[in-house]
Length: 180
Image (cartoon, rainbow, N blue to C red; front, side, top):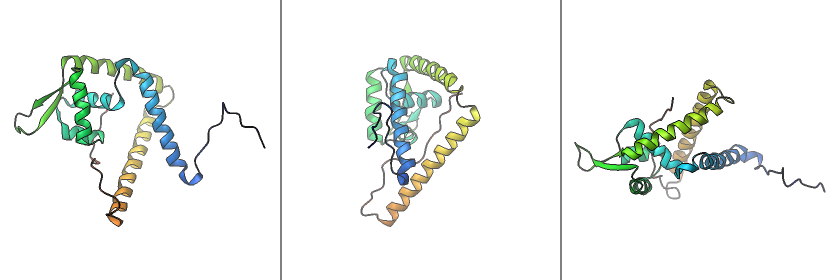
């Protein structure tokens, strides 16, 4: 039996699951890399995405933000509460519909969002050495197509066996954020 070099060994999923396996590994790597790069801000990926959305769109409802981030409204409410405590975000009643809360950046949140943008541009300059703009766009298109296929697959499974598979509480509607 051959000796396995533990330092360089990496098990791979079965061929039938290879793409799914790679996606899981990529998701973990993205999360770990994100935590490493943005550690100085003491924010998680959801919080940074939320801050970015609010900065770009100025004032969105909690429902719009939940749909855009692909999380439930209750989960997002917890994230917003945490960012309110840190004085990064604030809730404001909608001027036209008193049932709706608009989420806005505070002055501290605006300053933080600018620092996050600077960090993003720093990272973008590094990644541009490996992937050009066309490559970024192609990857984004492929990932979006894959996400849409997953949503369609989930829908078909729910239709074929509705008793075993409840509908997800998150929507497939997204507001796309671009950082130029």
